[in-house]
Image 1: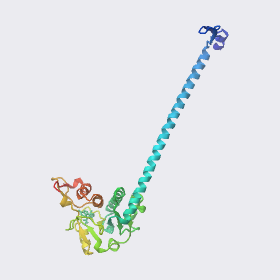
Image 2 (image 1 turned 90 degrees about the vertical axis):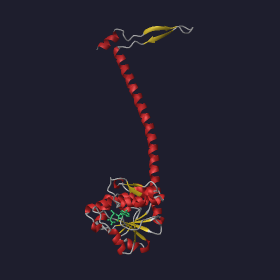
Image 3 (image 1 turned 30 degrees about the vertical axis):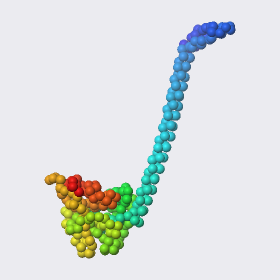
Image 4 (image 1 turned 180 degrees about the vertical axis):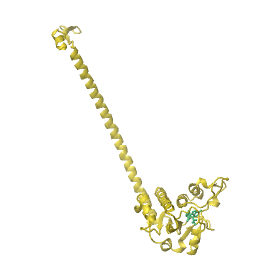
Length: 288
Ligand SMILES: C[S@@+](CC[C@H](N)C(=O)[O-])C[C@H]1O[C@@H](n2cnc3c(N)ncnc32)[C@H](O)[C@@H]1O
């Protein structure tokens, strides 16, 4: 009501000013004097327009950012796919021409459920290491019974286990490979492994034994007339002092890692450094 009254009082009437900037008749510039409510309305409209412009700017910026991110995402997606393809290709190749390494899984019967579970984890880890290697080994899991607790745990705990790119068989290593090609790895062997050869298959006992049942795999191998060998830990390593368990009995995946690094580098020092745990107390000798 007050605003209406102001307008009626003549507040909305234009005030007149004159423009003398040209030689022509001066032009009357009409400055509109706004009423209070008109000023309020204008202020409001200005604010709405400003907000709209800011929103549009933000929206445009977001579109550009998303576009850039989308391109990046597409690139990393392509890279991931490409990496996976290469990985598969390498594993496929390893399963034709790679160095053969076998995990003998016939020893489930001598392990507790807990030890079997730990073995399952080690199998998952060693497969992961093999996938990432430049030159993977041709991995065999022998004596693997699909009805066993070990197999079921492998499927349950190791993602994609059934599709692992390795050779899995229910048959024993002795049934799959000729006797003269088998070298059973045992920490108790009198023979030290010097090289790894394509003509041989290196068998690791699929065993987790906390109390370390000495000579178990060595005796089993001897019974079947198989050659055995131990890793060259003594040749390349020494005790670092008095701290450590000084055990040369390694876990299945540590032994596998050592073979994998050696296969890729032909360097026992690198391989042992990568696979022998620090807590063992063994360090590399300086002079080799
Ligand atoms: C935890 S160990 C089991 C040790 C068990 N007492 C035995 O008689 O083999 C698991 C497997 O890793 C391999 N291994 C462990 N340490 C080794 C070493 N120093 N040299 C060769 N093989 C080793 C063996 O094949 C062994 O069966």
